[in-house]
Amino acid sequence: MEEEGKNKIIIAIDGFSSTGKSTIAKQLAKQLNYIYVDTGAMYRAVTYFALENELIGESFFHEEELINRLPEIHITFKFNEELGFAEVYLNGENIEKSIRTLEVSRYVSLVSAVSEVRQKLVEQQQIMGKDKGIVMDGRDIGTVVFPKAELKIFMVASAETRAQRRYKELLERGHNLSYDDVLENVTTRDRIDSTREDSPLVKAEDALEIDNSDLTIESQLDKLLKLAQEMI
Ligand code: DC
Image (cartoon, rainbow, N blue to C red):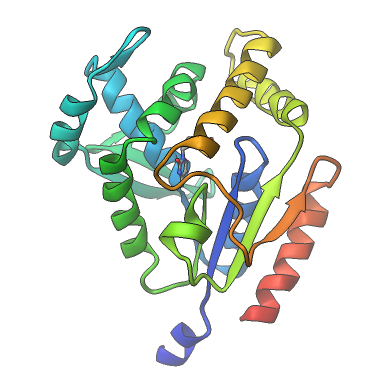
């Protein structure tokens, strides 16, 4: 068993929203028999909590109260055999679907700019990766959470390509919205995520950049699998 653990690595996948990080990360983890962690889901879970408790809204953000209530927030993941990935739970409630709305997307960048929120989630993420054998996607995985990750990928794609993808995804899930709203959300989040003071979205120096605007999922997966196997 020890021998097995020795060869396991940490794969950090960072990048802008809707670059297809999670699709690739999920499949990569499956092929390698690794754990996959979607850290965006964790920031979304805290945002969902804030919305449910009326701590954030159109013209207000009770940041201090959210900070004080952080100990009430317990985020867990549970593997769903049917779906083939782990769904996110907030205090025992499956919130996988509820966190993928445009409403949560609207507020998540504000919530994730709060240092106390980041501290709590980063700590939990580091514990999840302590035995390696993990693929984690997010914004600060290769820079803050696992600066020593063996393989770091930074995914980029044009804002229009990303908004198209997200728009299609939301429509398929039955949400009624306009492409312009989605594009607006994507560019606003890019701006807030990359300019916040704590752990802004930046490419780690040793990360490999992949622009997947015109790449198929299969070709990206192929490339990443080869890279991972070389490291392992
Ligand atoms: O990956 P996503 O779009 O579901 O992430 C939602 C938001 O969470 C994103 O706009 C910024 C924030 N986030 C973060 O600040 N750090 C991470 N490691 C992951 C996500």
